[in-house]
Image 1: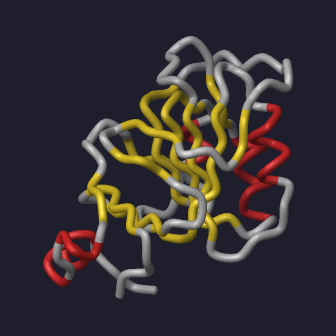
Image 2: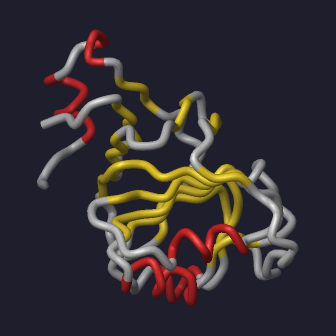
Length: 161
């Protein structure tokens, strides 16, 4: 699907029930634009659940991770991004940090995150899946649609075209 978030905003009214994320997240990954249905996880400085979810084969899905906004470690690196690509994930949005940014920027996936951090996360296997997660002024809900490009992130209850 070819789109721009600006065109989607122009073509759809607020009655279409879409939200626009505050510009808090930086772009990473080789794909500037990506879209798909949302899967959510909520973790804190622990990426075990992220790996578990990214191991699933999917089509046209985006993983949204509420990492609590932590700047103390990275929740995603090159190995997990490669796993996501192999299993069909279109993008990953993280309210937290990533690492291996130079490598991530060469991979065919879209990523948004707060910052980079060289330290890997803990492995305690704590977290929740498929909850509504809220950050950047948006409620990210399971199976809603996310559109991201150089101008921002839009989340909609329904597919926008």
